[in-house]
Image (cartoon, rainbow, N blue to C red; front, side, top):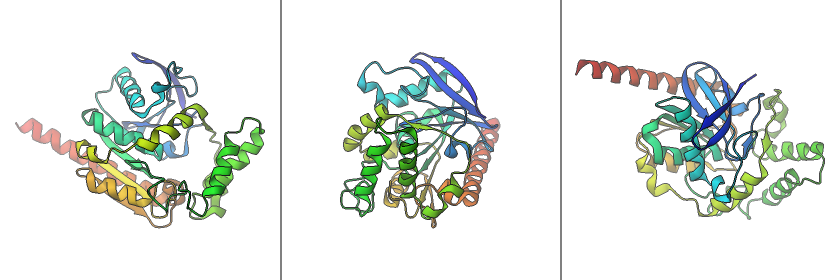
Length: 293
């Protein structure tokens, strides 16, 4: 189980779950609510990092929203910076999947000097639905209507928890390379919820999201990973980020959709470990050079 901590910051009190040993790594998702059972994505990093899994404003027991703008992506980055400072860390890494990765892009643009590394998985630096027929949220994608129906059921408070849960399973299957392996992938007692208010705000904000012209400002070592068959944030968006972020490294997973950390877990962990070791080596080399001056 993850250790819960209520962290007092200059921007309010935030609920943080901590697990693992090693360099500090922040993990979050733009509209998820976490608890002590953790998160499938965050769990991958606990063998190499000390992971700080964060409930953002309005999620779990974290600070409430007073004004709608406080749920924006930029305001969220300011909250994350306040949390890092309250933890007494001069730097930490950031890992994000999907909309968590989109937050990571913004974090890198605005606060590269506070980040030791960026790990972006199945993400994008701009609005991804209307410009790509490969995206399941594009109205001409063959599974668009089914996805919308399932999303409506997941957020329908008139349905029972069991009915919403079944809809969530079917929705996730649409984003797997092997849908029949759902129960093989999601086989742990990990329970997280979808934050409806944050999702609603994101659904409006993402329509004008495009930071591709600012990606050159990311000076943090960046590792971009994506499933070749990702239907949520299609692979071309990861390729685009890798081309525009200085010194970014890209790894594609040939038998994965939106969840390469579950669909090809061994390879994913190997790649993360390799990246972690590279950063340690670079850091050690930097310290040696500094001592020689």
